[in-house]
Length: 390
Ligand code: HEM
Image 1 (cartoon, rainbow, N blue to C red):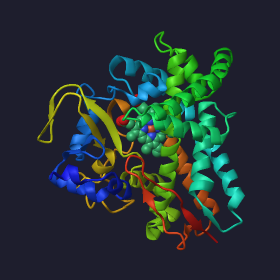
Image 2: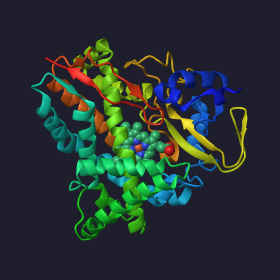
Image 3: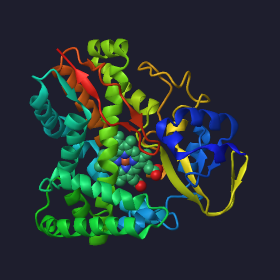
Image 4: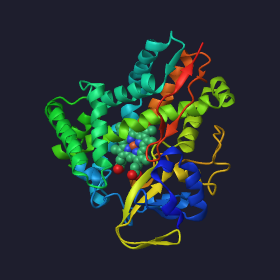
């Protein structure tokens, strides 16, 4: 039996890292039957996949993303992708959201901490990371009037469609209903923003003109859904994973407390060590060779970012969390044309979350009564993060 036929989904969900290590050593490009994907696990090969959209396209056929959201930047390549990205990107520049940490994120984070600071204990996932990420995203997108619960439901239902590789009509019905609901909800808002622009991402998508090119109504709606799916869970997960990483290394936490300049490298190292988004999914446009394996045209390929970030060919002692590591950038936000457009916002959220918690909760530490359980391979995160302070 080949290595790939022995790997089960449950094993990947529980802890994919030992599997990735074995694959990197024995079968760096390997068909894993249980997930129906070729897993590409070495640093160089993952970079190659992400940076070769002519060979490994994000415009898969069928495209679960385009089918569910409408044609969007993550499900397209080439000139179309470049046009959409050039119109959407300006809102994410430092000049546009540089004040976000102080004006938007810190006030929300402080309000959340106010609700539990007297208590001496909390679950930093449900009481902090989740609501922080949802409220920041609502404000950023211009959907403040949408209930947090509704945003979360949209996320779940749209993500159901995005992951519906088997084309299950029941799942698609749920996703299509959510998609229609988002369209209906934002249509009047878009109409108003055309007359009265504001500083939100939605307004920017509606009104930005690059060389005479604008997004159509359908494109605004489709890309808004990508932002909902890409920007909610992953940001929650990075906040939670990074806090768990530093809290489970008390000596390094002490160093960060003494020298706040270490906050940024400590967060980047956490994103490398436990990457919230596991893969870039692509499809080959023609027969091609990778890692000694011939992939047929149309093969579905997952470039495993989380594995590249632990590749011993690129990192010294890769399983160790080390805030002093200086070995270059990681791939948690992918690379190439689909490099995460929201990375700056996600970093602002995480850094601000750390700053507020470390300032306000003295002697913050993990609660020994509640061991942390981290699961998932495509999206990996702790479901709870129980902590205590004095
Ligand atoms: C820690 C949080 C985040 C992580 C780890 C993350 C990760 C990623 C990754 C790995 C990709 C590339 C996917 C691929 O290659 O197939 C990506 C793309 C993308 N992300 Fe994020 N993301 C995060 C936060 C956000 C936020 C906050 C937003 C928006 C508000 C966002 C919006 C997007 C969009 C629109 C794309 C597609 C870009 C394109 O196709 O050109 N992400 N993200």
